Amino acid sequence: MRFFINEICDQLYALQQVQPQTPIQTYRGQLISIEELATLEKSVDQSILMKSFFSTTIDRNLAVFVLGDAAQQLERWHVHHIISLKRVLFIIDADPSKVNDLISFADISSKSYFPEEQEILFMAGSIFRVCDISFDENEKIHLITMKFYDIDVKVKELLVHRTKRVGNDNSLITLGYLMKEMGRFDLAETYYHQSLNKMLNRKGFRYDEENTAVCYHSLGGIAEERKEYEKSLEWYQKALDKYKQVLPANHDLIADSYHCVGLMHARTGNIDRALESLETALSILRTNHDEMHPMIAYCLHGIGNTYLLSKNIRDTSNVALEFLHRALNIRQQVLPENDPSIGTSLHSIGSVYRALGQFDEALTFYERSLEVKLKSMPVSHPTVIANYHILNTICQEKGDYERASKYAELMVQSEVQSLVLKQPDCIGIEFHRSDGFSEDSNT
Image (cartoon, rainbow, N blue to C red; front, side):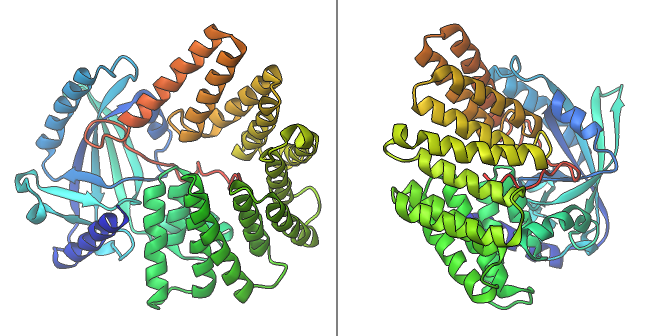
């Protein structure tokens, strides 16, 4: 899949180089949810980032025609009862002369099986400015006018606040980070590998040595999300080794790497090595920060989770709860109340009580965790779906089948929405507002 996406990106850039460099207007007909439309309406004059490849046409009539076909598909799938949908026509102004080798778009008619569609394809990660939203009474469709922005001009305002977190100004790495945060691990992995390839070939990216470590670390995070813990440990260890070559011994990024290496040792059953790495990370962080710092909470949470993974949880539960509550206390005092990492702390505390068979206490913390997550994540996010699943399971274990049924229904609705949003020709334009990025949750 990564090779396939890379190949598309390379071909888009190659096509763009030989096509006319004159501004164009292109269209996309789409069904989107009421919630998405409301968010877009609040995003006028804001930048939005597309998480997937964005297919459009220069034929307005064809784009409008697609709306009817998409509605019929949803009728056949019987999902229109679950998700309320609106007919939308995106109108995009784009200037090929402002495209670089990171984010491209091109007319792919000459390569398409259906050249009559006059398709203009925008690369995944493209960013647009929402200019205007109106409703056409005659066609009964919402019109959303957008403008494509070059990554080196306007997009910098979207990415600049991420630069400090990733430790550099490499736009591919930053885009990878954004994709990972939004759960698009396939695209994130592609961006990180693209960045690695460019750096290893010395094509002018700055801070190459440190950025190489950033990519290794980020790929470790993706493997971790996929529960490929051995692979994740390999990437994290490579990142740690590289960081130790290029950074001071007490640098926060070295502490972060020790932390992640420790967590993967715990996941693979080596609790002693895990605690050794985590304690090293905590020692480094305490030389750089006071106790009420998010990174200290990050490390305390990791130690608590490691004790939670112990085979003798009844013997280690008190220690696990102590570290997890200390992390939660710091996060609640220094972070916004809807920060995802607070939800993560609550979730882990619930997991301790669940492991002890104390289901009422577990439910309380899992529900508090879900409440926080729903303030910062869409209901279709994998973390939210997993939370519903756990709540459903615990309620069944308690014998509270009515409550279990409620969470099962919510879980199914979220799963359906997640699946339908991935149908590019029907529903669910994927976007993220420029003012909506939360800080790293450090989960």
